[in-house]
Image (cartoon, rainbow, N blue to C red):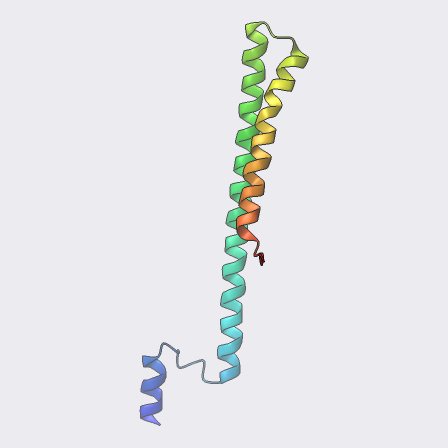
Length: 102
C-alpha cells in the first residue's frame, strides 16, 4: 500500500484523486479549460486587430480628405484596409483549421 502511494505521487497524481474516473474527469476538465483559454485569447486578438484596422481606415480617410480628395474617393481608397484585414483574418482561420489535402 505504501509503495503504491509513493508511485502515485511520483507519477504526478495527487493522492486525493484516487479513483481512475476522477483522474479522467479532471483530465477532461483541464483540456476543456485550456481550449477555452486559447479560444478567448484568439477572440481577443481578432477584436484588437479589427479595432486597429478600423482606426487606421478612419485616419487614412481623414488625411485624404485633408489632402483634397472627395469623401467618396477617400472611402474607396480606405477600403483597402478592410480587404487586407479580411485576408489576414482568413490566413489566421486557415492556420487553425485542419485540412486533409490530397
